[in-house]
Amino acid sequence: MLRFSQKLDRAWAVSGTSLCVGLDPVIARMPPEIRIAPRPVLAFNRFIIDAVGDLVCAFKPQFAHHAAEAAESDLAETIAYIRKTRPGVLIILDAKRGDIGSTAEMYAREAFDRYDADAVTVNPFMGDDAVLPFLTRPDRGAVVLCRTSNPDAARVQGLNSSGEPLFAALARRAETVWNRDGNVMLVVGATAPEDLATVRAAAPSLPFLVPGVGEQGGSAEEVVRRGARADGSGLIVSVSRAILHAGDANAVRAAALRFHAELKTREAVG
Image (cartoon, rainbow, N blue to C red):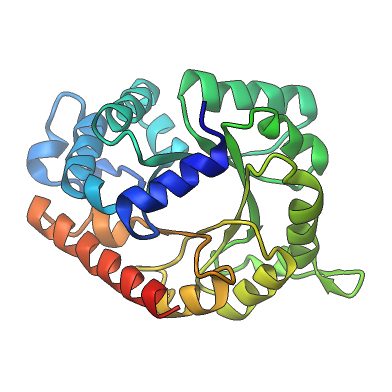
């Protein structure tokens, strides 16, 4: 059994870069021929996986985009399809779970047993009780919300906590307390590059999931410069809409190739 950190290293090695593609299906924005398919969510996900699967280190299926369409079975089949066709790719279920310990245990079972995700996004607002149940399996990981990419994130995440922003204190706890088995990541958005550097200083060893590049305006260059670990590694950079809604299969692949090439270049420069 591979540990989570080993899965992550394998995913980076297989793809050759840090690109992650989110699977956020929106039926109204799908190509017409997929929109009218019997199971459009599953058809769209497979369309994206087939187009870009060799270019990514991770796929990040978004739970609400599936649940809103009553497509939980499509989510499970999507993950099984990734396992079959791209076995080296990491699967991060973007569900942002966070609850008391007994309920968090059920959410962990949902993510890891029902859906077979390698990791799940977790909201740490309720403290250790909301995080630790996701960390009991060394082969599975928790991707903890830290400094997110949405416009109003700093209102709460930037509050003062003993002389430093709350997000920095959270990153420090993740580094020193939660990461005993090497299976914690942090969500740190590309839209606040100065804060990205602050989080890296507080959590020098942790890998980051970085949303916000693409339609949200984050810079791949800034992400690598401010967010990479000392050895240049440690990033999974997630792009969703700028790739998902690029057009037909050729256009989707071309969009992914642009991000893949830019990240690879930036990572090589360090």
